[in-house]
Length: 271
Ligand SMILES: C[S@@+](CC[C@H](N)C(=O)[O-])C[C@H]1O[C@@H](n2cnc3c(N)ncnc32)[C@H](O)[C@@H]1O
Image 1 (cartoon, rainbow, N blue to C red):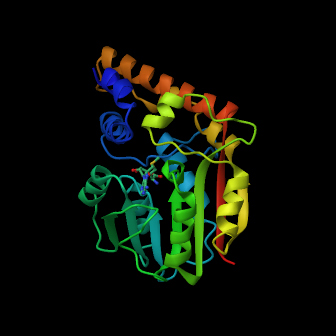
Image 2 (image 1 turned 45 degrees about the horizontal axis):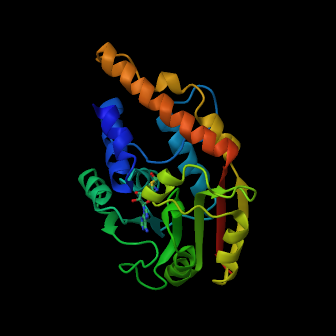
Image 3 (image 1 turned 45 degrees about the vertical axis):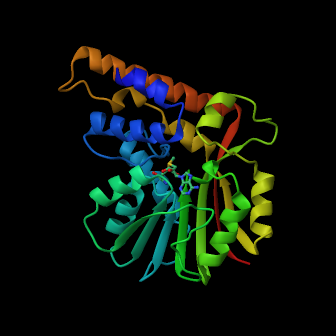
């Protein structure tokens, strides 16, 4: 039944994230990050590989002391909770367009050092000019139809010495973007290519310090996925159903990553 709802739900952006959150609850008993896993070694759990991606992104920042960090498209808040626990001296703000994700983020909140707000990355109506030192956006920009406006907002909210990191799934230049069009339309998928990304920064007087293709690490991140769902305390039928759901999702993600997409991390600052 859940599998059926998942397949049906994947026809809508909001429903997809609702069901992904539910799936994590069923499999792990808690909310996990909503992004792809990043491989570092064979022994890691899925959760550790998701943490690896956050660590990989925030390692681009030069300094955390007493900074204000904004996560744009923070999902269920798991990244913000993790970053705050690793860097308790910073203020963290997480914004997301999806109210349900923000509600989950607030439910799981255990410190007043984090603030979660419903907002649109292309407007950032609740974020003041020049108020942010560190800005991250992990696997969210692919949903923004107007990335120029998103970059305008980065420019506006970042302090003069502020830094940003964006991890995003891009269309390969040779890909015409016609695959899975039905899924893209309902999931609000607006992938662009690397050339476009360079233009978004230039056009907003921002500059990239690094840009890195991490597609291989993400593809490898799915290694050993059969061990991610344990058999313990589950009926055979729900175990098989969950494994099948995971199998379908992994096939879908890997096909896209190997054939049509690449996973990039950009870091930068004001130019
Ligand atoms: C794949 S999830 C990633 C969430 C989180 N960054 C993480 O790594 O776990 C993408 C998130 O982007 C959010 N999102 C999509 N469009 C948005 C927009 N225009 N403004 C803010 N958030 C948006 C979605 O609601 C979703 O929570």
